[in-house]
Image (cartoon, rainbow, N blue to C red; front, side, top):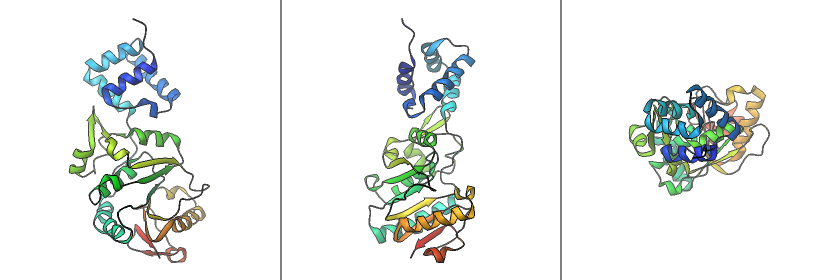
Length: 259
C-alpha cells in the first residue's frame, strides 16, 4: 500500500474528530504535526492514524495539540449576566429581532460564540448574525475551527455547554449551528474603515494594549459605528473617561449607550 500523504491525513483526522485541518495554515500545521509524529517514533501518517485510533492517550495528546489555549468564554460572568438580563432585552425592544452585532478584536472566537449563546436564550439562531473581526489571520483560523480546552469553557453555563459543545478527547468543539451565526473577517482597528449602524459592539480587554490617543480615537469610531441608542460593551480593564464628549451615556462601568 502506498504511503498516505497529508491530504489523506487531513480527511482521516476530520473523520475521527470533525476537526478541519484546512482551517489552519498548512505549512505551519503540517510542520507541527510532522514534529509530533517524529516525537512519537512513528513512520508516516498512516501509522500515526492507526495509533490515534487505538491509543486514547495519544489521541488526547493530538487533540490537545490543536486546541486553543488562550481564550475564555463568558469572561467576567457577572457582566454577561447583565447582558442577558438587561442589555439584550432592551436592544430587542428598541431594534427588533434582527440585531446588528459586531465583536471587534474577537481573537480566537470565544467572545462571538459566547454572544451567540447568550442571544440564543432570547432569539432563534436563525435571527442571530454576528460580525467578528480581528487583525490576526491565524487567530481567525483557530476561531473557525472552534476547538477549546477545558479552562476556556469553564464559565459557560452548564445547559449551554451540554447543548452546543461536543467533547473531543480532553477538548471541546463548538457546534456548527453556533459557528454558522458568526462571520469572521480581518480588520485593523487603527487603519480600516468601521462598519456602520450597529446595535451592539463588543470590544473587551484589547484596548489596554493601545496608547491613550489611539484608545480615544477607537472609542470615537465605535460611537460613529453605532446606531443611535446602540450599546458598546467594553472590558473590565478599560473605561471611557470622556464618554460624554464622544456622545455616550454610561449604563455601568462596562456598558455605554450612544445618545
